[in-house]
Length: 326
Image (cartoon, rainbow, N blue to C red; front, side, top):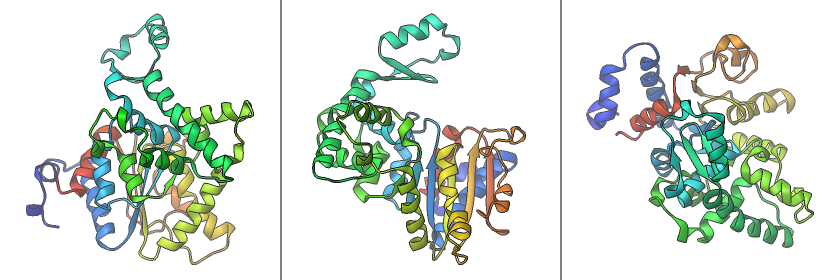
């Protein structure tokens, strides 16, 4: 792809993003594109509050244009894209969030407004609106002796059409709907700590649902292991947005297959990039430089490796814009 085929955003970052983290943005975007052009597939992991940051406005197009083949995300990102779809007008932005007193924070709670940095998610219109419909899907599956992954239940919810009356944004801006249409594989480690996971746990505690009705994290790992084995012929890259379990969980599938399953023909991840704000020296895995992953059997000596120490809400849309020739 020559620059004359690229749009204004791509040309801008090529012209001005020349050093330091800025240069890493361009290098990582070009290497991502090289991976796809070479026939490799790409895993994108979503941590933090990327769905509430409305990454779906551009990430949905990445999915539609086959720039991502599998996603790993937190339970929060899984559900919050759908919450934004059905309750967008009820969200409240608080630009002065740094100045709030504890009493003002309590006032938001009393109004049913759960704050994520500068954005409040409305409990009644978002959480409870989804709860009403997802519980029926869980119960119907259990009555039929069926079990599904958390993301599969969300796909059923979206594709059933029961939420259509609530849509408040353009459907093309929902990455979960784009993923549902393609039945894109998703891995959701630690789903239990999300709002929907908490709600499901409450129904289990009340004896209205069995814990086994939603498939577990171990089953997600074995699913991912099979998917990786079946799709790694031309390489699978790893594009990590943020840190935490969304990235830690899926990257481990390679050493698990190689070391624990003793499948020594398992290829390493063919590309690695992380947009991170974590500090290396604190001993956090999220802040580790990519070379550390070589020692754990995740990346090879010559795997293209990038770390962009910056804000993912700024950087990810720029890289996606480059990949979409914007």
